[in-house]
Figure 1 (cartoon, each protein chain N blue to C red):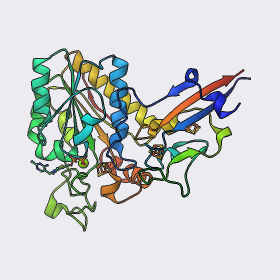
Figure 2: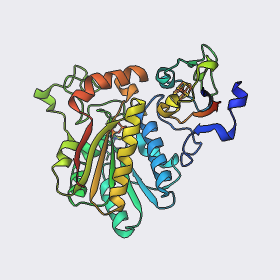
Figure 3: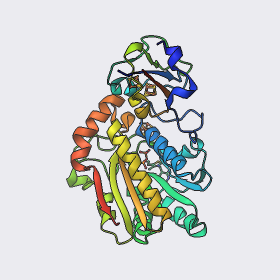
Length: 254
Length: 76
Ligand SMILES: Cc1ncc(C[n+]2csc(CCOP(=O)(O)OP(=O)(O)O)c2C)c(N)n1
Ligand code: SF4
Ligand code: SF4
Ligand code: SF4
Ligand SMILES: [Mg+2]
């Protein structure tokens, strides 16, 4: 059977999600952000919520997320996405509302907004892209940067005597009464991507069922900031990020 | 016995040559172009060993830019 005989509409088993438009994404080659965008689009499509979803995009590399997924979006000031999402969800309870935030946005400048929105049990989902660095601004140290990890602002490696310790926001979120589902996932392999998709689905459904707030951390790569190829960045993440940021559910209030 | 055959189409202009699909393919079907580049200047993924593709969609699943469409047939 030739390639031409196989490539027919009736044999199609995978394509770019319909909600992801044809605008070329500005992300660096191999960046985890794109994979997570696809999963969000697929879950919204599978839930039939294309016309009832509002995303809140951050300041960080995902600042232009609204250019790529054809749903409604609001762009928040740096770190303030959970506050903006709170307002949208309270005014429009029948909308699926989520924020999409990097670790600099969520775990640094937006720490207060994040913790309080989660603790209030707002019926939203926070998608937290943790690549342990400020990707957008050139690879500076973030609160999530690993001990010993080199960045533009800690070129000799993060030193706890000067920079303190990496912050585990997801562990903190799991202790808050308002959270329904708190999980840490990744998108470096096909099985991991499938699990991450299920987690996003569960979080989105919880938020529509009034169960409380949901946090889905995705341990991610920033191959440009880490100064590695995309393939090497995935390996580095498995070796160095996963021991400190272990994958799995931290809290699941049934 | 039924046999599964697959094929992929890579949107070559959308591809950024990140190599993640090449590494993810369990059957080493894909490779990046050696010299040829797209309009953005990236080498891009293409089917190098067409007959080995099973349409498993691993390549397309890991592609951050959604460049790959996958087709699959069962031959009775
Ligand atoms: C009020 C304010 N402070 C600082 C900045 C500079 N700034 C832009 S993005 C960013 C951090 C981005 O890191 P992260 O949230 O981890 O996103 P990534 O790019 O890694 O996905 C910072 C500090 C800004 N734009 N606005
Ligand atoms: S700088 Fe890092 S996070 Fe930003 S697009 Fe590039 S790889 Fe992705
Ligand atoms: S569909 Fe599967 S076998 Fe075919 S190229 Fe993609 S990963 Fe390889
Ligand atoms: S994963 Fe996507 S962007 Fe990367 S080389 Fe393959 S087709 Fe191109
Ligand atoms: Mg970051």
